[in-house]
Length: 345
Image (cartoon, rainbow, N blue to C red):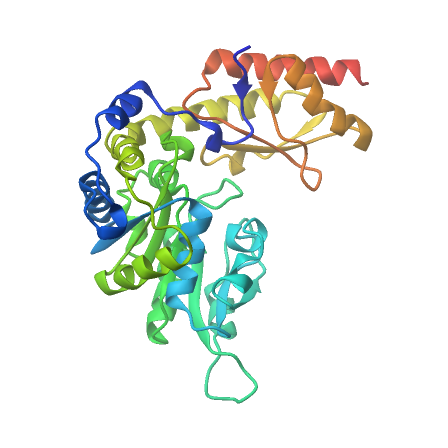
């Protein structure tokens, strides 16, 4: 059975163009820096983000943790949102790999107050305090919202006042730029390093990019090796990433349109609670009025009907549209949910 999969946009498979590019890719040993396809991808990524250099890494979490490891001294402190992916969904890796403390700020819809950032920067040389080494932002946020550039600008200005670097978790950077109708460089100018995924909505099978200035990427390249991310003939993977950046970014607007359609149809169901204003990109979060045991059954019911979904997390469900989900699939998703609700009234 061909399943409709709305668990995440990480489930996307490579397009035919990607598979063809991977088949004929020119490759070399990337640890020796002689893989031409990787070099081409890294140059393209640096140009798109307006940074001096870029590095191909195995995953988004790898890229974020590599950034922390490269920017920060062990025992120092990183300031970021309490709801950021680095805090919530990266397995506490910052404490293990970079050896840093995360100082979180309460966020509203993923947005943190510049005043709160300023308040949490460690000032002076008090013997009791760790040093602040980095500020992290995330756009698009993992809650599906896009952070205003004015907020990013204010935080970046504060960071520069205190000579602190800023890292952007831009896993869905191109979703954010699509929503804002802005060039990606209009977002990444408010950070010193940025990670973005080639997989997810862009459909590449493996890989992410970490970009920054030349000195930062030089250090990150060695740290990538230390972390086990020094790949050999990785040009086969990079070839798909090149297609992703050249051909797939423009398709994200259709994912966004399908997410809005899905949200609008879900909002018509009385048992569903959803805020349509929160649907910025390809993610639809909603609450469903069901008993806990029924919530556990919903995943199996959808699967039996040819649809893969994740179970609720903290009482909230998430459907994610992607390149392989079309309007007909949206109709089936909505009708399946209605059937489940009617069966369990």
